[in-house]
Length: 287
Length: 311
Image 1: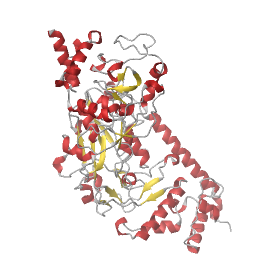
Image 2: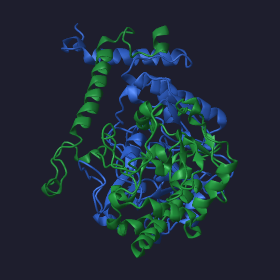
Image 3: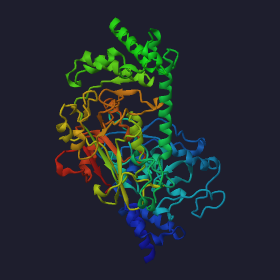
Image 4: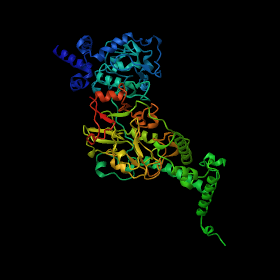
């Protein structure tokens, strides 16, 4: 009993958007001993309700309900930007741009638009073994499909309290745990505004940048730096520190080749001295 | 008697003389109908070369003179790159002062902004306005920062990445250093350069504490296919050799309400751009709610460019 309440307290902290704290205490929370009764207990406990987690549930009740699975149609991911729900204080209404990356989720829908789901938390086996959920407690488990997805409606998300959420409003689901990020996102200190700084404010949804099943951004190769050192050997201690000796040389070659081609064409024009060349401007050809 | 030029193996001087005479004749005959092929007058026509020489400072030109100058700029770009560009002269908006903030917890050093800037602003391909420096985590020690970092993957553990560009100081030392007033602060806070008035003395580069200004040692080399035809007089129009240039907050975009190219390119959303005078703008939220800092604040340059970290 003591263990259970201790675990419940830990989950409660995470639900209260103290993700870091929970992660530090995470080793005892491997997916195998995830206590789903505790989750239900937490859902009823008022102490876990942060403003961010509580607000969406209220506003969601008034919002139009997500299309139910009866239609059995895929949601229209290419829809127009939608106005965000009024869940953030002190923010003028703004629009959220639907995620372009929802394609990555479609493989699930290929089967689950007709297949029923097994709601029981378990380690996923064939044919699910190509899918890995790396979300929650830094990939150590603790999340399950139906933490965020509605088990009765494969085309709807849900809050922890079971209120349906449209995919276009995925930020409602995210903000239950990531309250700090959600507040910054609503005010513009997190996330990315699309297109303009003036006029209609359109912001990318959380899932546009963070793949929802593996939210951490992956490291990748940087584009070339200043060209001063391109073509020159890099200092040995930089190479020893993991930098490549000749990175950027390829791009340098590319644009130098372009320049040389352009020079050649200019020289051709100069030597031919006729209006036949393609580079001679139109007004010249007229005269 | 034989013409001494006939002995020349390739007749180069003969060709040059012919072109000179042709240009002279045309410009003397009709000032309106310009015509010349490449080469002479620095790749221009005689009339355009004269007009270039007598071109006034941007702030002293009348609207008509600016319009004529812009036509000439477009004509020269057509001649040089074979591309039709439009050179806008969009004025600053009332009640707008631009500011920029970068979340260095979010910046991951990909340098997408750097190359978006190069392509948007028609930079010579050996020039980069944005300098992303790699620092030890939590440090702002620019002396030990590396902007040549080149790892197989970024971000590296234990490193922060901090993009630097023109800070558009409210008290800009570069403007004070310019002996010919070729650089000044626009009403919307953008520090701009009149590339045709700049004499290339590079005093401004010495005065800038952020190394934000760049000198064109040669004519900027831009592949014609990559030339951005959407330009602005004070922004990304093609620049000549021997002048200083710098970030201008993408004046050709931001004065029409768009985001700068670096903000648009950033894949992590680290960049926040907006109007400092609008209390509801995103940048004002950042300035009022985050622990922001500016680089070399002790110099009193009052940059309109802030950095902040999450939490």
